[in-house]
Image (cartoon, rainbow, N blue to C red):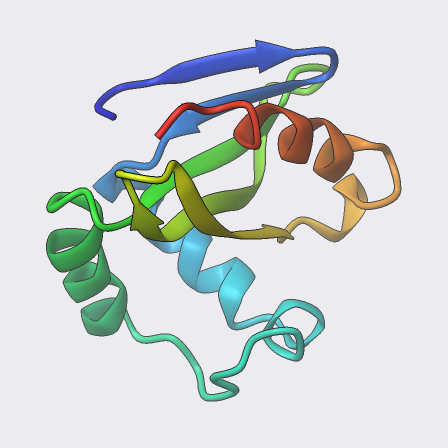
Length: 119
């Protein structure tokens, strides 16, 4: 899935790019986000770039940036990993990295969108 853009209600999901690296690092390393991940150590730029090149570009992971349509601000990320293309199944993940965007239904809308993606 390259250069995908999905819109619904108050949210746009767009394909992640290398330009999103700084936001991903900022969000994933924030204690309120990091505490919900299995890996608790800080995400480094090198680790993220390896993930991007090895997982996203190889289509092992489909990852989107969540954009708040009201402010046009990138606020988090959602993804599908461990994709079983034959049976159309995957593991789902999401995080809202911008604290000011939490509690506004953005995560709910993003979840509705990504779970409709046909893999």
